[in-house]
Structure formats: structure tokens, C-alpha cells
Length: 153
Image (tube, rainbow, N blue to C red):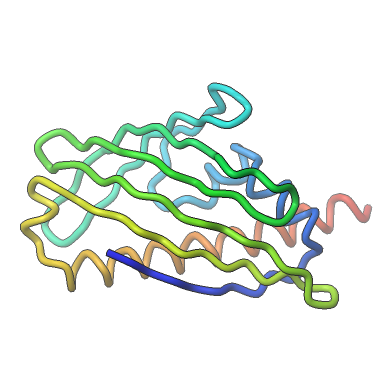
């Protein structure tokens, strides 16, 4: 699965960068995230529970940040295992560009799934991935906006 998207966030690039690297903010924003913790400055461990079509599973995984170019870009990659549901692995190149008072966040994702998930078909997986990304960015924009309001007060 490949997906390229662009999101406009009503916050400065530095604030967006800080939020993208804050495990507490990410935990609140990732749909189904049950735990997320930094295990090193560039590695995180996560547990996420999701439902894709008829398959519901809890995935445990590790995420690695690389090609760090603060506050402009990084590569995020990871792999999650969901028991009999299968696995998901992939990565995304993330770039942040200032546009006035807003930040444009662009991401290019490449991912693959295996096990029962792979049997569901690419159409269902793609539509679920887009829905989850949309939920994440709705939550993320609200969280970054809240962080901006706290910083201003």
C-alpha cells in the first residue's frame, strides 16, 4: 500500500515538530493507541488495538525515527505484530513546510500487511488506512491547537 497526503495545521513548524515527537500527544492522537513510550531518543514502543473489517487485533510494535532534520523532516518506520491477525510494517517520509502561520505536513507512506489482514483485500485495507490517518490528523490538529493555546497563556 502506498499513500501520499498533505495536511494543513494551524500552528508554526516548531510547534508541529515538537508535537510529532511528543509520545503523550501521539498517544492521544493515534486511533486505538493503548500505550506509547520512548525507549530511546529515536525509538518508541507501542500497543495499538484496531479493527479492520471483521479482524480486530492488538498490535505490539516498535517505531524508529531516522533521517532526522529538525524541524523539517524525518523518516518514521516500524513493524507491528498482531498474533493470528498478522503483521503490518512500513514507513513514511514526513516533511514540514512553513506557510505563513500554518504548517504543511506531507507524508509518503509505504506499507505492507501479512497474515489474515492480507486476506482482507487491498481495497478494505487502503480505505481503513485512510480513515485511520484522517482520525489521527483530526486529533493531532486539535492537540497541537491545544498546545499552542497553553503556550500562549
